[in-house]
Length: 427
Image (cartoon, rainbow, N blue to C red; front, top):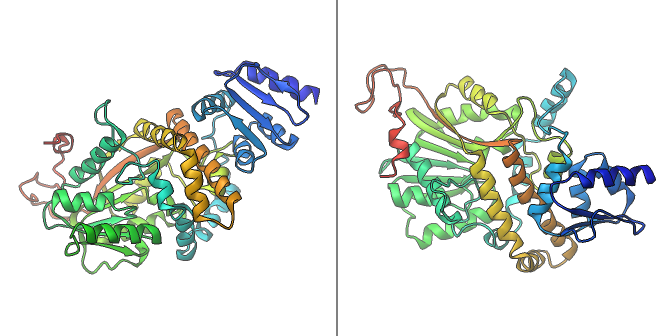
């Protein structure tokens, strides 16, 4: 093992933060006083980390084959240093790889599998998510319009930004695809007076939002449905549609069909805001170095990422016209760090909540907690490094009528005024 330990010692010296290793035989590498310490229980985990397989090392942590002492922020700084010569956005794009990906995308995104995948992630435990999300439980990128905003303020700023981009008006029929715990649905109804419909595949979220609607007395014009987007009735089109943090679950093979469905659900001239994570590379559906493999196994089974250029192409194929596109990548990095810090500050409570949700299997609760610790901090790192991004894409269903719409410009063919000033003036 001498050549391996020499390699590890050399790598440790080049990291931006002091890190110490304890190898399976008890040998210690790195500075004695390092705040970040990793204790390896088997040589396989050591070899995989030495080979740059960060995702496999993450699996080792979840499965308790690698034990951590130190902060997640230091761990991610070390991970970036460890991957200094690796570009996780590079992908094998030969014809065979593309064919295998395409077949996998079809198989992984049936109605039944999508429902199971959503339940796997979102139905972990409402109380668990409540420990580190904001009070509205907004589980998507916040918008730090002002640098001094708290997470809760930035999430409200994001909700309002979406409503302003969509130009929501009282009485309009609004659809929220993948409505989560209902924050946008309720914000749009309470602040913009819309008639709002939300859909989800998560039973926990459906029950939670249904209770909120009743508590707020909004039953007459807000509803939450347990429904797949493919099963929505297009006979009564919506004026405005939002999809936030949902299309990452659609799959490459279904993307054009997804936007065709949105097109059919939207009235001519109406607007749709698609907010979601996009790939940092042009042809990768996820990240290399085993990062996406980790996420697929422990966090988001079936998730696929596309570069924004491919998303916009699929939008256009479906007949939608992109009218505005904004990259909020560093906003998501900050959001995720706040989620990560929130979870780290409530580890004991999180452990108790997860154990109470799985009283028959406390080891599963501990694995879930370790997986989410890595997922939140690791995702923050990936957004900071530019390996993944977050785009808000505003599109319209053209009317194909060149007459001005609602006093707008001739040829606009939609509600969009082709002037961004209305979006960024909160007043």
